[in-house]
Image 1 (cartoon, rainbow over the protein chains, first blue to last red):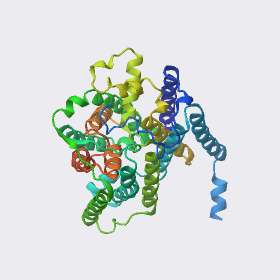
Image 2 (cartoon, rainbow over the protein chains, first blue to last red):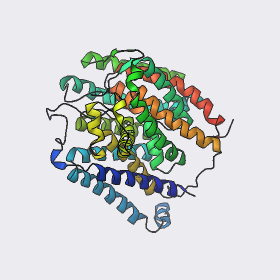
Image 3 (cartoon, helix red, strand yellow):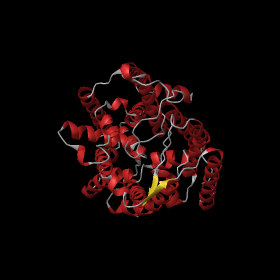
Image 4 (cartoon, chains in turn brown, red):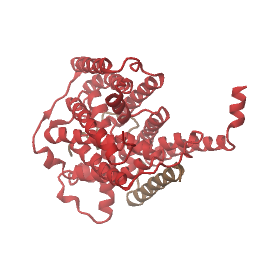
Length: 54
Length: 376
């Protein structure tokens, strides 16, 4: 066994995760925020490991 | 002549493979930008940059700490501090001038936070992979990283589930260094700590190799880009917990018992695509970027897998769970708390560093006991 097999497993895992996600909650590009938060005038609203829930 | 020999020795199909890797990365970023949104495409590109930088320049967080503790080689930690300092020069003033639009990695110092950082520091030395390191290792085909990663994600979900209870054990208000004064104190403290590591370092090992300087500058540039695009600094562990939360909900789990996951903001993210979550996008980019570098290198994926005893795999699973759980209690890992916390003026980043570095001494002792390296 080489790293090719483990890296392939990882790639399959990521592909499976994305397939599940796209089926469960398809994204809507028409609701996308501006490309840059900086200068957008909108409040930062992403999830972050250092933040308590909002 | 040597160059000609090198060209002749290049395996057949390498150029095609590398072209396919480049095209694949560009196509993925373009697809996310088109079908999810430009900001999300940019975040995936930034994540790919993190993965390529860390794997391509063989730079990380756990390894340099180990080198300092075991061999008194400070170059890696000095490069980490350089990267943090470079980000802080841009981030701290911007957070003051664009408050609200941009947010820092600011979290309260508390008992659970300190304990979590200590455990994280120990666990990351057991598997030799921190938050970003585990993703990079898994992407490049390291079997320890591959096994640790899903348990890291489960631990992150579980840690967030009980985070409010743990924080209730006692925590200070969020303490932040702001503006010009905050930047001066941060840079002064970074210089002081760097000087301490330099002085403790073994003579002859204190000079930063060029690749560390390049890695520090690239990480800083990507960290600043992360802040400008997402409005928040680089993080890792939130995304991993979110992946498990989505899976749990899909299997019918009720997250209403968790003050964290039941909060409106959390629920909205659980029901939205992972491709709209900033930390998920940079996490996926880290994995893919590391995979790309490993596949790009000649023989990068042809290395034989090492053999480990059963107890090493058990230790990897336990360490993975602890990495995830403890990093949520600690309000971040080496990326969210150490790199992003300090560079955005949060005092919890400094406390995290001290506690995690103390924990690293314990983890280094555990690693050979569980069969993850030859006992000395």
